[in-house]
Amino acid sequence: MNTSPPSAPRSFTLSDFDFQLPPELIAQHPAPERSGSRLLDGRSASPVDRVFRDLPALLQPGDLMVFNDTQVMNARLFGEKPTGGKLELLVERVLGGNQVAAHMRVSKKPEVGTTVALVSAPGSQDHLSATLLGRWPDEQGALFRFVLSNDAGDDPYTLMSRHGHVPLPPYITHTDSEEDARRYQTVFAKNPGAVAAPTAALHFDEALLAQIDALGVQRAHVTLHVGAGTFQPVKTENLSEHQMHCEWYEVPAATQQAIADCRARGGRIVAVGTTTVRTLESWAQSGTSTGDTRIFITPGFDFKLVDALITNFHLPKSSLMMLVSAFAGYEHIMALYAHAITSGYRFFSYGDAMLLIRSADQSTGNPMAF
Image (tube, rainbow, N blue to C red):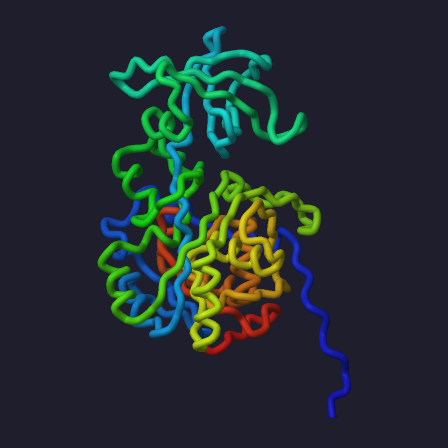
């Protein structure tokens, strides 16, 4: 009889989530067809290479798929200070009174009260400008609070839609195009407020959604406005010292009911994207259906709701690498990533996807039945 105590859970550091990615695997453009991207089926110990349109065959009637219906804003604005210096704003959040909270890229920050001229869309005489009010959310905040103005007094969403640029991730090297305006957005995007797309959902087109509906799989939506912090690598070797970025979320009453109904019928909750996981688990932990979340999911996290996850491939040392490792098991994830690199899968926002199930033991990566 073995009377030895169970081994302690493994302790992880930042270096555990690093890996070498050949630059040519970073997707610069989307696949020709949304559902034509590759899908790495990671439900079992051995990976299976599939195409994303195979997904309905991997689902069952009674399952509930939860999507993030956030809409990416044309959040990147270019301008010029009164001194002639160039400036770039990335609007992270729309506040009240035509105010926005934005990242500012500039060689020398303007003084509070300065009004900068912003570049209008070609052919427009809108006299678009931004006036700096201070930092946000407080005097030590990393963002800056501006008032956006034009001749017509339009709201920030309208101004960004007309004059802004698609906020492509930092690892995509081309300037935004009409293709990006169409493809860096889900087909069901509804609530504007994100500066990054919920990329796992980019693989769904109307035909695939119709197939899923016909199968008897239910669909529900949450909203999480993805922030620019999603691209920032964790920088502290001790994960407990990391300060997680803040994002706004909402779990509507209809989705709460759909989840309860799914549980009652014995169905499985399939989260489309890590942003959906963050939203659902924030609600499950806090009991708050709308608000800001700084949830930081690392191995050892106790998942309350999500049974399966569709997700893209994430940046080394990112909080999302830690999330998927917590969900499917660290060793399993690292093996899947090694397979994906060897097999030439396309990585990051415009890249391919993977299907994961929640590990019965997040420390070992033993899969649960799915």
